[in-house]
Image (cartoon, rainbow, N blue to C red; front, side, top):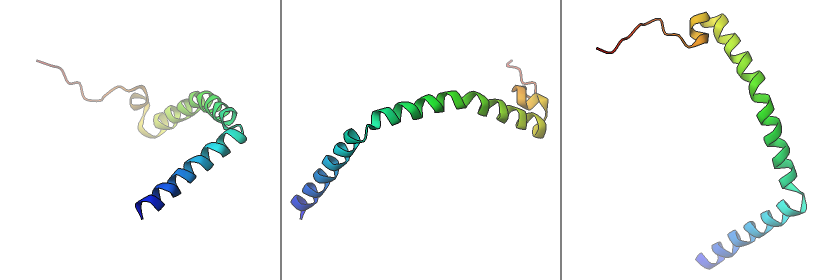
Length: 71
C-alpha cells in the first residue's frame, strides 16, 4: 500500500515537472510577477482613497486620534 502511494506521487511529480517545462511556465511566472508588481501602486492608491473617504483623512494618513505618549 505504501509503495503504491509513493509510486503514485512520484508519477504526479514527474508529470507536473514535465508539463511545467513543456509549456514554458517560467515565462508565464515572470509575466505574472511583472504585472503583479506594477498593479500594486494603483491598488494602494485606490485603497488609501477609499479609506480616506470612509474613515476620514487622518485614518488614511495613518494618524491616530489618540495621542499616546510614553512616560
